[in-house]
Length: 194
Image (spheres, rainbow, N blue to C red):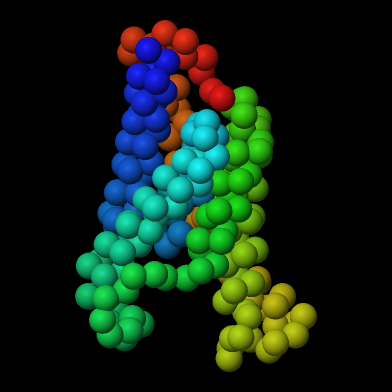
């Protein structure tokens, strides 16, 4: 019976992550996406570490394939290489894994203050990692401390949408999970979070 309860719970978690990934494919303001929320959610609720990291990561990868090849590339062909794009920016995936680890480590017990802190941390991590990658090897920014600072300053307008997206989608995803188990029959032995 316990295996059935775990499978049911993991199915709900995965369904919420898949819905969030689908939202990435809809029109939205730059950086206002559920990326950080997906990583935090998987890290917080999958009891097995491998699933906590792999399920959101694979979902991100699949949504990237669709987004890059079938939505963005036809609209902006000048920014995309010829052929099918299997993989995008490694810095996004690195930031995503770090955010998943943040969720895994800080959200064993999901409480609103922790959730807000983790969401803010996710936004900052994403900003720092991805803008560092933009600066590294850039022909636009000098490869020194001043260039790095200039790159971070240039990224600030995008940071606000990342922050709002992470806070919004974290509230929606974690709230939907809590509401689902509050309103539907709770499987025997379910204790809320990990």
